[in-house]
Image 1 (cartoon, rainbow, N blue to C red):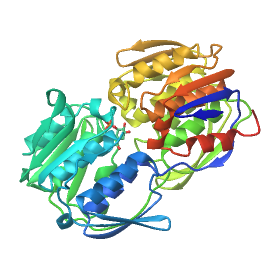
Image 2: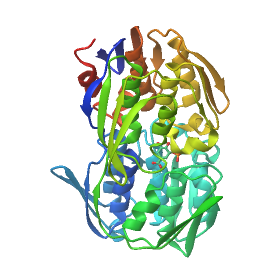
Image 3: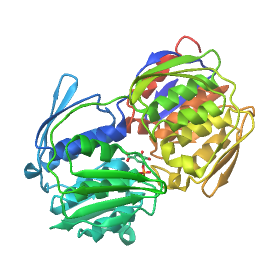
Length: 433
Ligand code: S3P
């Protein structure tokens, strides 16, 4: 494998063997920092993601007035609502859609005027989905591009609670509203018809927020009131969406067996494991705590499956790597109900379709997904990562499973979530080229 200013070449066919761990879960890491910034006192965080996205969150809470330091393997945050306020500078979230949406909600509840921007990918992503509820709560928003994208400024004096029925299944939007609700008068209620990851409500409850969540057969309701938060000790397990790259790498390459230690296995985050099992994957899961464990994967003959709309929120981030598994599986895999993928770091439906075709795969692009006919003879592809870390990593894994050389440009996008990806790739597949 060679790496040249943001481009890499990967030669196959490789095997993956050994044990590894992956960076701390990105969703939990963002929230641990943001909630610590709001908590009255000193929080300690272990296992924080070391990617650029989460580093941007640490910088952002420092700009707001939290004090962030490192003590060995812990990140220490001294926070509290009274220390936080508008910085002189614009808040730059880099590549992180999660950060811009969650932080916008958080600062709306603090009061004052805050300016946000991000990289070219973030500045293309839809923001009306947070502007609508935050405006209903009393925030004023000035935004680019017909009021739908960053850069934007958000100003608020006093927010009031609302009841909001979520028009899209999005944990980012839900979390933005709940974080704003911590600083609003009255009760803020979010109603989700389709459940999404629950880290924000669970972590706010742990920090002592006045929050209730109830599940009904047809919906979930989460209500929050103005709250004082307590500092906590956080111990963050590994990110399942990163572990998924190594798991699929082992499944689709010959002579492979990999164990990923200590990954988050909680609800709505590890559903990709069930999909892979359905495809015939040789997986074993060693549950170590209620929400975490080790996963071992070995080379397997995969076959196709249908991934249906109700499954999508539980595996939204793993679709690029699942589409790679599908390209190596017998039969045609269909993925539907996944139109949200079009507004991630890149349009993941269009970008993955083009990428997989460049390897020789037969892919139909659907408005809300893909149909992938697998088990054809694939050969090294040519990929543009489009500022999207998951496209870079998913196609690197496919490059290891096929003959020839795969060229990926824009590979440095992996820095946002998994800076050591290439080192781990080399270590796990070394000696078997
Ligand atoms: C995230 C929620 C999901 C996911 C993203 C992280 C979060 O986005 O794709 O990688 O931490 O809340 P949406 O809420 O937009 O679906």
